[in-house]
Length: 385
Ligand SMILES: Cc1cc2nc3c(=O)[nH]c(=O)nc-3n(C[C@H](O)[C@H](O)[C@H](O)COP(=O)(O)OP(=O)(O)OC[C@H]3O[C@@H](n4cnc5c(N)ncnc54)[C@H](O)[C@@H]3O)c2cc1C
Image (cartoon, rainbow, N blue to C red; front, side):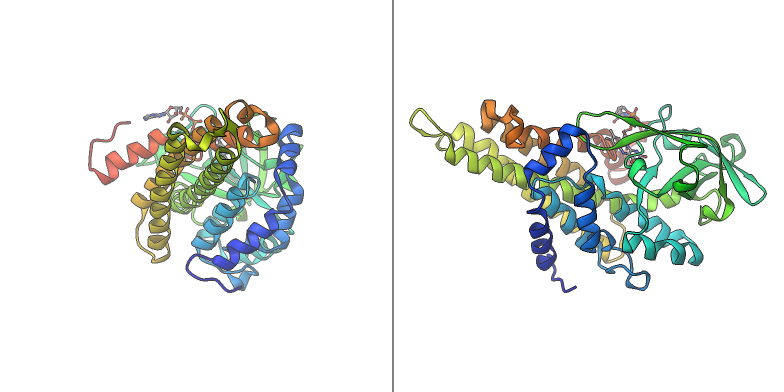
């Protein structure tokens, strides 16, 4: 596939695909808490979910900015990529740290869509953001690991074959640093689902297919370990910058959708015998949202540029996620307000997108934790926690 710096061809192709999945489709899924399988299948068939998998493993071998372009366009069209975006960033952990055998066994099947790697089990109910305090343990027994514990917010687990799981393999008391002793596993959930792995869906304010997982003596082969035992925290961290940039791109897409929707409604809606968009009180929040979106978009591009140049980009990836999530939320506010009462009616899609956009202030990393990162790692201030 050909692409230029902005991946114009990819953007156009994704935008075209998304026309098959208009607001009415997303509304139906949202109302019925239905996983958007048709949309995910169409993206898989188009090869978009394999964009970042190298060509030698059957993927398109495109850079991160292409993945960002795909996700942004989905959100800009009024859709939501949360049903399938995880594959783009979880796959990177397998690619960087997996064995050759694991990569040969799984990546071509993930690229073709035969297998889905959509579940990412890190967060736990008791430890929350404090990941090194997680309680799920994987104990080595012969050629296997026995996993016990619980995860929360493991999204898409019911719609995924594979899960990247973070568990403690050495007790915290036995390691020098609390970040040591955690390991990553590529779990084939098909073999344990319904027996030693229970999945319980969690209803949320938006349609997100998120779940709680319970591991009860779940036995997994030892060769599901990704990389070295005890190094898992670092492997998960190594994928965070890519994840933040991809999510930031989704937020930019959302912001563009809200701004376009608000601008168009402001021109059409006539009150007091004139379009409401003639009032500065309507114009200014939309104009400001646009300015914020453009600034955030530049930071996303800078983060992607540095990532692709192989440099360190923790600062830019975090800034991009922070600014883009804020920009999309401000645009959501402006859009809802512009629509007045109609903003609350389902048929306009504004209230659905509004609910969906709110998530990015909290997940995959909350705004406070990004600010803490900036204070500590960029500005050199004292660690606050
Ligand atoms: C819909 C949804 C889908 C998700 N999908 C996944 C998934 O697929 N896989 C996965 O592993 N996780 C997933 N998550 C979890 C998500 O990453 C966490 O919710 C997020 O990181 C925040 O963690 P927490 O909910 O445990 O909040 P907590 O850690 O309990 O924090 C609660 C609040 O306190 C603040 N806070 C905590 N500590 C500090 C501090 N030191 N300084 C300042 N403020 C602080 C936080 O910012 C937050 O606002 C998902 C969450 C949601 C809601």
